[in-house]
Image: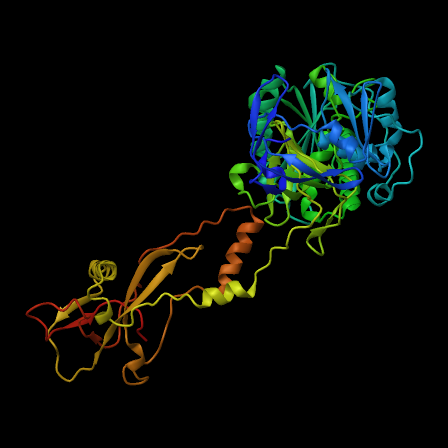
Length: 611
């Protein structure tokens, strides 16, 4: 029996009856049908399921399972259900005095069991050193870490991502309290912009605990502002004050603005000898480790380079929860916060995941899940950050199921086929759709273009078509008033032996990006095509910036970290004054001055259409 109508693949509402439940009450049955569930051995169909809206839990009859040939074994507080062929269907643990079947937990465990646990945790921890992981488990540094084998198979991703050099001598002095010494280093520029447009990143490392924080920058000029934000946040969180800051001799660190800030807040700024990064070994080594692990993780899943910031942020998250020789017996996280980190919810970076779509964002016929890519951990909301390739958006979700051995196929804009399984549980509801079918690739169909071609906005061709249309009359009044305000012309008597140029109204409908109407635009233009070269005009000029000049200005702004601002003018009139001869134009239609119909306008400034 089930109370959820959406679980039914087929439902016959003509079957109506009553059933008696455990408390002796009779409740109504409003249909019978068939539902489909996913198990470890594939898709299973359950027939003769009663639709009972008044119950609050789905019930699976042991008697009917036995009648249909299934085998059920109860032992050691465990219920084992086998199908007709003898394959294990579900293993259900006893909770209280009941056996509650959790499809998400059972099937996810079955999928995970096909993956080598040692290799899986090696990938989950960002391809971290295997010996260090074994010591973590041995010393119980973190909670939730599975038992690992002593040997790890060769990891090709580590070979591609990690390089080695001879070690540098280490300093003997160590900080004795938090924030007594902070190491910092600026990394970049990276060859590709990140998803948020960053090219640089900056690290801050506490010398005592080796806790690390990373920030991403678009320009090196942001270093001072980011350090100010970091100082305010970290001192408020820890209750300690930054005493010493150690950095290299990069121009972003030796600027007057940066040094003035350190002097004002009382921070001693230590600089390394020029071209000697070994003296800032803590941050340099951390920078190398982050890039090594990020390259390994991205290569493992074939991730494009634009995801480098997400990979680096994930690496920092993992390194803070992984052991270091400098802090024996603890992780930087425990040394900083005072308690052990929980790692059971860690997943392989950039693996395929399926996120639940809230009911408010779908209807009954839409899929309840969408395929996405896991790219980071969201610590503020205790959730996962996932990337949606179809839209390029990053979303935060806690209802996520992971397929850690699969990856996105960027060439086909699709993911490789995955086994059938069910997942995601919201309250007491189990979602049973098959999510192994890849969604239809979102492309621009020609039919959409054909439909758009059949829709056209008819714009007026002359004044007589709009003389009774209020929206166009208002736009014409705005244009005429702006011309008058700009003192573009002067109404004079019609001179003798002079050529007169006619004018016309040009009507245009401006649209928004979604195709809706933004506004109605009207321009009064001169019929300049009636003028003849050598008779009515002798030279032409257009006050328009050359494209080369625009590119030069933008390149100068980019090189110097300047900000370019664009704006839009509702009306634009040239300040060009006439120097050779007078130009007379007819009065525009609809705005002929009563009693002075024979007069014309003498132009003082340029109008659209003149040559």
